[in-house]
Image 1 (spheres, rainbow over the protein chains, first blue to last red):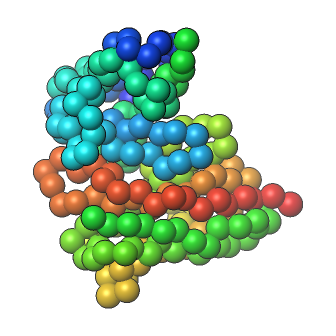
Image 2: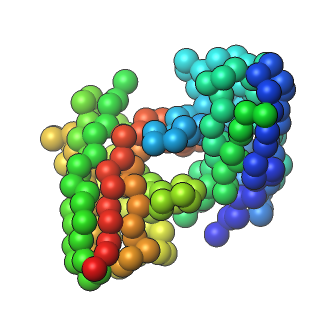
Length: 107
Length: 119
C-alpha cells in the first residue's frame, strides 16, 4: 500500500496568514493526488485534484503543487471559514489512501 | 451535480449485519462510486470502490470478505452490505462519487451515516 504522510499534523495560524501543508507519498504517484477540506460534523469537500487543479467553486486563495512523491497545499490570506482539517489522498492504485489529516486552527 | 444521501446506519451488535444505501439525486451511471469511513475522532479511510458498470470492484483489506459493494444504476443507488461487523467498524460511512477522468478523485460526498457496533 502507498503511505501518505502529511506535515504538520496540527497548525495554528491567524486570519490573513499564508500556510502550507505538505504531503509525501511512500512511492511515486505522479500527479494522482487530491486535497480535501473537512469541517467538524461535515463531509469532506474536494479542493484540488490532479495535484494542482482547482475544483470548480473553490476560491483561488487555495493552490497546490507537486508531482511524484512530494506535494504541497497552500492557502493564501486565510479566511475564518478555512479553519478545518485537510487531507491528501492518492488515486493511482488501490487501496486508495489518505494522509492522516492536518488540523488548521485559529491562533 | 450529483447529490448523495446515505441511509441504513444504526446500532448493531458485534457479528451482526447492516446494509447501507446511498441514493443519488442525479444520474450516477457514468460515475465510479466509493465508500469511505471515518471512525470517531479519526481520519478518513477508503474502504470500497465499484466501477460504473460494476465490472471492477475493490476493497480495503480491513473489510475484504465481510463487506460487499453493489449498485443499481437504474435506481441511482449504491449499496454496502456489511456482515460480521466488529467494534472497530464503528464509524461514519460516506459514499463518494468520482467522475470518469484520468486522475480520479472524490468529487461528491454524501452527508454520512453513523454505524455503531457495540454490545
